[in-house]
Amino acid sequence: MSRLKGLKAESSQFTLEGKPFRILGGSIHYFRVPRAYWEDRLLKMKACGLNTLTTYVPWNLHEPERGIFNFQDQLDLKAYVSLAAQMGLWVILRPGPYICAEWDLGGLPSWLLQDKDMQLRTTYPGFVDAVNLYFDKLFSVIKPLMFEEGGPIIALQVENEYGSFARDEKYMPFIKNCLQSRGVNELLLTSDNWEGLRYGGMDGVLKTINLQRLSFGAIQHLADMQPQKPLMVMEYWSGWFDVWGEHHHVFHAEDMLAVVSEILERGVSINLYMFHGGTSFGFMNGAIDFGTYKPQVTSYAEPLPEVPSAQEKRAYSPVFIQQHLSLWDTLHFTDKPHRSERPVNMENLPVNSNSGQSYGYTLYETTITSGGALNSRNNIRDRALVFVDRQCVGSLDYKTHEVALPDGKGQRTLSLLVENCGRVNYGKALDEQRKGIVGDIVLNQSPLRGFTTFCLDMKPSFIKRLTNSGQWKTDLKSPTVPGFFQARLSVDGPPKDTFIRLPGWGKGVVFVNGQNLGRYWFIGPQHFLYLPGPWLRSGQNQIIVFEEQRADDRILFAENPDHGKTIDVYKLPFCTLL
View 1 (spheres, rainbow, N blue to C red):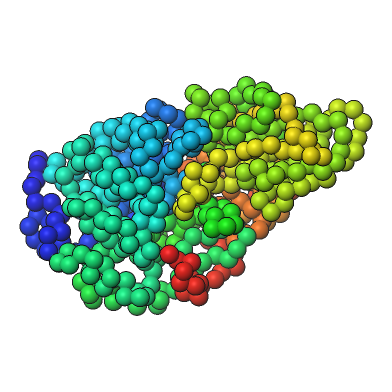
View 2: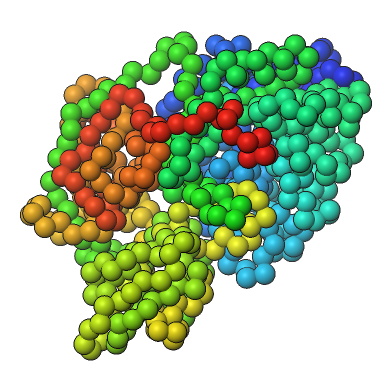
């Protein structure tokens, strides 16, 4: 069924199907919510009186290796948009290619950085070619879901907050053409914060604004820029993201209510970002770097409304570690190690069909014949544990560039276990997000050479090989860290949502039945990992913890999350929210 009169912005009010229309939207990212819960989350949105779903589309998940696409299962975008339509929700799609979203590299695939000259978010030929191939595939999936084809997609966003980046004046027209040349005839939008609105607009593309406070006449400023056009707050920030080692941000309902009420009283359309934040499962969290690198936590959640019915949760009884396996005993389960004179960054390792390593850890080993001062020259991205003959002697990161290596006789093995803690997702530093060791490491001023490098991206296939190995040890008196620790959770009856707590542990990652729940770190503020009920099964469930530094003998569960120490978003300086 084809339709003609889609969403229009031809006067001070939107029209849809020829009638006045107010967008009351909410963002829920399908890639941050277990598929079994999509319907529940959309029902809650509908119950709150919203009429439009907005979602980003993460390129890095849909094309994890160059030319290899995934739109299945958890990433079935067509099914997600179709489900919204079944519930009577319209959809505004935000296909990027860059999405920010507090997501690794703003959703751009890390294999783009294999090109040392890459210029992301520009008309650099290598970027243009990759975007075109991806959009060919993406739009073959979503074209039948457009309003004019009888689907629910009434508008698409052109890129994301480009006004704050604005590195190439030809880039936004290129992305606009990418959409229109692939048959998109729906309304096109841009979204920018106050700072980014200064960037010149494009003909036929509606500007919208992102904000949390109505300071400095922001909405009137937008109205003055676009006379006789409908006004929309594309992202009303209903929360704020957290970074490791700082406070959890809370946003009180009364502060939110005052702003939303004023927006609605002015007749302005609004999208709540987020309606439900969900979880950056696995290694997908982003980072910020405005002079200091700060990786974001695993949770992206705001509390869900308690309608129509809250998901039942359960605090399971503690489980005890039964087996452990040293990291050093798992290296033969990785891909073939890469040998090179100089260290090779993650993205340029010859793994994953030569698309490089995107996430997780990388182990670099070389031989040394003396102790002394090991200096990273700030070439560690982002954090490294340093070992001599597999004994930990210190760590390196953005703040700590030097570790003293003990003296010893003969040849010894120097190992650096480097973690990609998350690529920056916003700002001018996107092109510098290569991970691992990105330059020379020196010992007593001499650059180290002759590296053997192991890719530890901890994909499901690796976890499966670990599980099936007969090497697990049951002697828990002397567990080795870094290492893997295994426990079993027995579930009676239908599985329920729960939250894993690891109070006696240090830093690492948790896998349940092969699913990567994300990172934990004792410095907080997040002191839990969300474990969705649908990822458990009645009966026995396998839990594997990869711990870097300090293991305990048990894993705890709670009914509710512990977000740690908090800070009121409204007490932050306004400039930090731009």
